[in-house]
Amino acid sequence: MGESIGLSIRSHCVGTTAVIYASDYLNKLTGERIERECKDRLNSGCRALVIDFSDTQLVNSIGISILMGIIDIAEKSDARVVFADVNNQTMQLFEMLGLTRHVVLAKNEQEALTTLTGFSVQTKAISH
Amino acid sequence: MDSTSQKLVHSFGALADLGQEIANPNEFHEMVRTSLHLLLGTLAIRRGAVAQCIEGRDETECLAVWGLGEAFQSRLTVDETERNAFLTSGLSRLSIEERNPHFAAFLDRHHDDLQSQGIELVIPMVVRGELTGLVLLGGKASGEAFTADDLEVIRAMVRHVGVGIHTHQLFDKVEQRAEENRRLYEELRAIYRDTVRAFAAAIDIKDKYTQGHSERVGKYSEIIARELGWKDEEVEGIAIAGYLHDIGKLVVERDIINAPYKIDAKQSNELNRHPAAGFEILAPIQHPYADIPLTAKYHHERVDGRGYPDGLSGEQIPLCARIVTLADSFDAMTTDRPYKTRRIFSEVVEDFRLNTGKQFDCQVVLALCRALLKEMDGSGSDRRMTKMLGKNYLNSERDTPLLNELIAELDHSQQTAAAGSA
Image 1 (cartoon, chains in turn brown, cyan):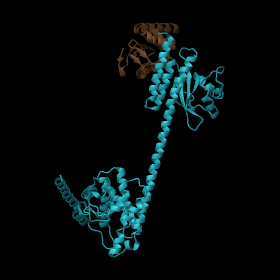
Image 2 (cartoon, chains in turn brown, green):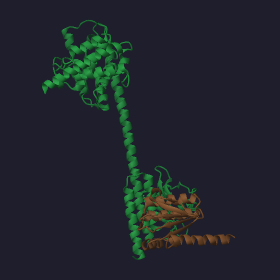
Image 3 (tube, rainbow over the protein chains, first blue to last red):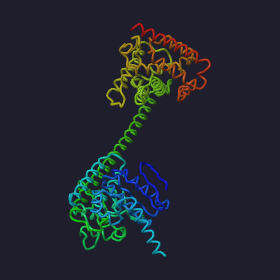
Image 4 (tube, each protein chain N blue to C red):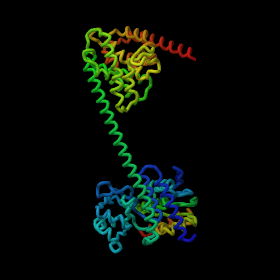
């Protein structure tokens, strides 16, 4: 489980799941860093992304656009995206804009990882 | 906060960010890309593009693309009729049932391409009655149709983006014009320089014994001015003044100028008219450099006040005239004349020693001496004087001590004079 803090974005891997921590304000600068981190993690073999919003107070329009881009990229890589620990205000925004239709929501990082393990078991069971 | 209020706050925030982005003088393509992000993020639209009209062509080019495949056709054609239709018709949905009739021809042509990329809306950017470009938008992440409120927000944001692009295009045009003007100005300066050199040649042709004199005086003056630390433009000006210093000779009888004997007093008076005549010729002309007419007028003045035509002394004589005076005399001493061969360099140095403070200005003589030293020790940027003087005229080993000695003397006398006046 290696943790990196490149360009202020914290992230680590749990198996083939990358956990990426969004900053307190998700705007162009921080959004692009998260996007780059997600791309790097997917390129290095991760099959799921957990974006942890526990520190995030505010997401602006560019942040929304970048998150949609991350969802697109993940879909193209057959990877799942889980948003974890989203505060009420941001959750309302995500719901209002329809982002919640494209991601799984989890109370926290642990729940996100458990959810993804469930998916993984299900997927394996189906594939068998 | 209810969802309507939240939506409004989110949209206002995006508009404020967009305004800031457009006012930002950063790189243009980055501005457009960020603006597209803001537009998409406001309503969670999954894909889109911003294209600008190419001036003079019925085509657009994409400035920013988000979420569209690589196969997306980056150039869309918009003919004159469609342009005019777009100016007054807001936006159009792509779907055939809901399309704006003004967009019919455009959408017929591009429908399949746009539909395959998931584009749902086409919005023209119209600024000051001109079609600046088009914004293409896909569907919302929610999967819901665009509401009337959504379309209002989109129109407002697209207007902002259009203004940003239009402003950039205007800046581009202004920059192009400025560049054209700079080029024209350079061409005019080159024409002016060539004309002046042609005049200098004409002046020298009249005097069969001093061919190339005016051009050499121009070059020596330029070298002295550069040594004195003048700016490039001023150096160019003094070169021109040097080329034209003898233009007044055009009105002097050729026989007097070319007399192979010592001329009499009357003829001498006639010849001495040439500085004032030069001023009269040059004064009515608007020169791009200052003091050219005055240099012609005063290049036979002496710092001790015994020159002509006005008997000015010291700093009453413009510095450019003091420079040309020395350049003129230096060339006269170092070129063969019908009545005498040129002086050897040690005699020239001796002449400088005797006449500095009388005929010549001390700082100008020092500048010429230092420039000569630089050519001899190779520390100068070129060896133009050596070329003009002929390769065997200067001898570094022999002449360097002479120049160093003179420089030391003149420096000392300058310091003494400065201490005396303090």
